[in-house]
Image (tube, rainbow, N blue to C red):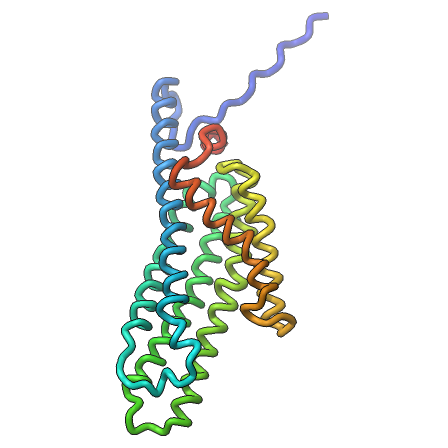
Length: 263
């Protein structure tokens, strides 16, 4: 008996393709979609690198003296270093939002829920960063009007504002980053294969490590800034840095991108 022929594999048209479109037109549309996605990839890579060049100098060069010296608030005068750090962190917020927005149109083709979750995590992280900025600028304002005020009250107010900033850092970059950049983005990149899976593993390891260390700090199990917490951030640090460089230089994997556009 003659067996019936196997059904032909179903080929999904590219997003935006109209019914009856010729193969050549479909190919042109697919190519245009992939080129747009590669532009978004390079934008995301550049924005990830911007987060490094804004966050690290702000913390180490601009804020360190204000955060480490209880008598900073008594110094008098508006400190331009703190203001510079606040400006850098505003750029950091913009870059954080940018990474989520430029990756969303690509990643939503795999999972609408996870890609929206990544956007939400980035916005939540930025909320904590913004509160930290306000706390340090309030510290700067009190320093400007320090003359004639009770030094003991100023010291207490200054320590309170520094404590607020410290906890916004411990919860935002210290916890939420592990969920967003680590677990969610790591999972999306692993599933889609848009970047090498060996690289995605860093996110899948770094995310839980940052999250667990952040929760341990939250409950006082380990000290903030301790060696344990510093070591736990290394995989996440390498994940975000390598992802930024890879996307900026190479973009998305072409084969994986083609498969994603056809789903």
